[in-house]
Image 1 (tube, rainbow, N blue to C red):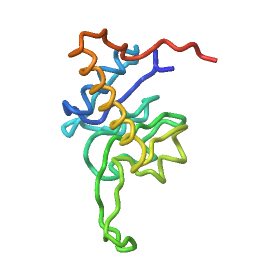
Image 2 (cartoon, helix red, strand yellow; image 1 turned 90 degrees about the horizontal axis):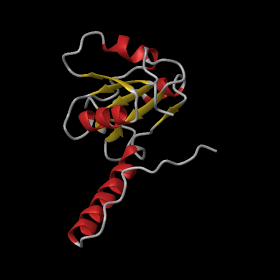
Image 3 (cartoon, one colour; image 1 turned 90 degrees about the vertical axis):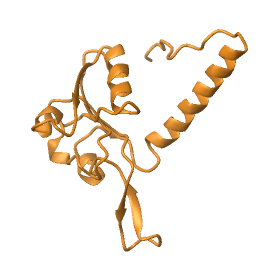
Image 4 (cartoon, helix red, strand yellow; image 1 turned 120 degrees about the horizontal axis):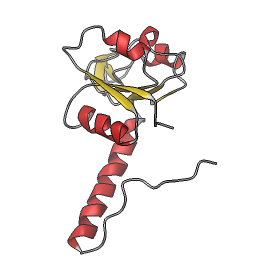
Amino acid sequence: KVAGKSATVLGRSNLNGMPMAQMLLSMDATVTTCHSKTENIEQYLRNADIVVAAIGQAEFVRGAWLKPGCVVIDVGINSIDDDTKKAGSRLVGDVKFDEAMGVASAITPVPGGVGPMTIAMLLRNTLSLARQSAGLPRLPLRRDVPVA
C-alpha cells in the first residue's frame, strides 16, 4: 500500500528521480524529493516509509538514516574497487546494503533488483508504441488488483 505513506526520493534526474516522484504522487503518497543541494538528507530519510535512492553516489545512504520498517528501492548502480574480485571491482547501489538490510522491511539488491524491472518496462513501452502504431488501444499503466 502506497497511499498515505511518506516517500523520499533521492535524486531529481529526468530518467529516475522525477518520474519516480511523479509515480508515487499518482499513487497518493506524500513525496519529498532531495538532491545534491538538500541539507540534512538524513532527517528526511528518518521519516520516510518509502525511500527511492537514485542519487548516483556509491553506498551514500546509511542504515542509521532509515526509518525502521521502511521499504528501500535502490536505483543506483556504481562500480567500486574490490581486490577480491577478478575484475578488480564490483557493483553497489546508492544504499549501504548490509546496514540497510537490518533496518528496512524490504530492499532491492544491486545488482539484480531494479535492473531487470527497467528492462521489463522498456519492453512494455516498446510493445505500447507498436500497438499505437498499429492503431490498437493503449494498455493501462497499472491494473487495480484486489488485495488478497
